[in-house]
Length: 640
Image (cartoon, rainbow, N blue to C red):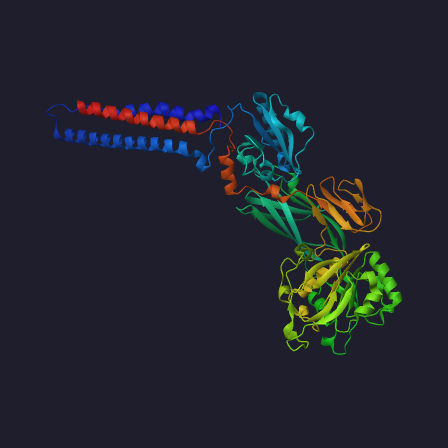
């Protein structure tokens, strides 16, 4: 609010009030003596109306006076801006917001970050100033103590706003008077005072958040895309290689969240997909470049250690049922061999090998299996009543994620094996891993009962345990391959896992993970400041960026570490591996009502100018002046 706009309505009231009082205070002409009776009656009616209007005006003046005084006193409590600090010349700590949204531009094409630096320069010319920069790394003191003549632009140097910044954490711990200079998209609720470099209509923004993939039938996939931002309609477009595949419209709700569903058909192979929102204030969060791998059916070779003539009693019965249940939606191809025939198994055609209730294996097959895993194949071992821990330990050795110690069975009070003494499962220790498998909900898995299996020694990564602490699912990495061990059976000999609703999605996700794919086929995504880490053999990996640029990442200690230098999708050359660097969805979330009130109470707002309370006091004084004038005129009129 500038001086002219702020003073316009009090000046208009000051001019209009005396005129209104003068018109209402004029006494009508008195009727002449011996006037006709109708004239006298009309004169009396006019006098009564005039008295009623004067009383109403008096009441309105008193109400305005009281309301103006109360509002002026209660402004800080109500969350409206109190007196600004523009006339203050004391020392102050200026806090510059370095979040990515400060790259956005206002209606005049000026970057909010440039406006923030200009305001800091203005403050530094008139008072002692200390300077703090809030970036993705946190709080950075560029000048710790307030000094006169500071040059903020020089101290900021080549700093560029990017990434999500926790302003509340950055503002905390600063002593003395401070002023946060921000665009208001992620405004702090902990700052003493705030200066906004944007107006309310310049903070309209939406950004892309999480993307989830759900395989459908016959090569179809469904993308569920989350959109964060200001409420209102948005248009979302999905394209591949510059060709638009789908366009939808969605509504971002009042709480700042919306979701769109897009369906498309994809052939097996790797696909680079682009999601784009219509352009708004900040364009960087409007686009995501996804890497989606469609491998087709996962090829599984199963070695059956407990083959039965009765189908439903066979060790692999529920595995076949799972393949049948998935049908054409998200299938896996199953090839079976019995234990003892594994030497003739087509190992070179498989992506995952399953050893179900197996014992000692053929030496030549184990040598081929070791090379298969080191090249990137997957291996899963499940327990059973016929498993020989000693023989399997001797055969597989380090191909097991954890050595097998012994078999166990649940016993009743009489010391006899009993299903009634079964042990329940615990909540998974690594929910993120189960999310990677496509299990965002438990789907009945937490009701699983286990009454037998094998005891695993320490080793690998325990993903799931029984309620008594025994490992149930353990995984590990061997060179470029992944291995897993399930300490109970895949059939109903030792547990009821196979009849739980979540068994099929758990099995499908685990097979995909072992084959080197996530459940949805999406490449990993990172935010600013995050790095990608993965166990891997070899010496280095070459990454190819969105513009064709190349970056090399050395592999040290069996760990590949990579931090993308630029936004977009990065693919590893010669390896089925991709990483997407994208914006943080928290930067695109609108402020809540509590944040807006706290922001207003700290002195921020879309109109940075004169404080409001002096004008409320002027209003109260004008109202009292009008009331006094009316009262005096009434007394004088009554004296006549």
